[in-house]
Amino acid sequence: DSYDELTRLMLRIESDELWKGKEKTTFMAYMGLMQQYHKSFSKANGDNPVQQAIDALKSHGDRVDDFYDEFQEYKDMEDMQ
Image (cartoon, rainbow, N blue to C red; front, side, top):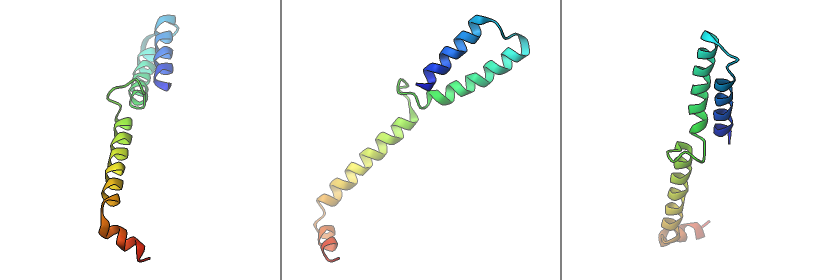
């Protein structure tokens, strides 16, 4: 995924030593921020907030569906349409 690709790129830049001084420090700081951003979307990240939100919404949707499936008054109201 994009996080792994970015991590490999950063390791390559670090090991190639083509970048020096302030340019390298600035670029690596920027890439570090990008790496953190991409990590939030990585499937390998156990704390993946995006996946947590998706899972929570799915769970909520399932509970809402279960509630309405068992709510006879709501079913009766739907039949009135």
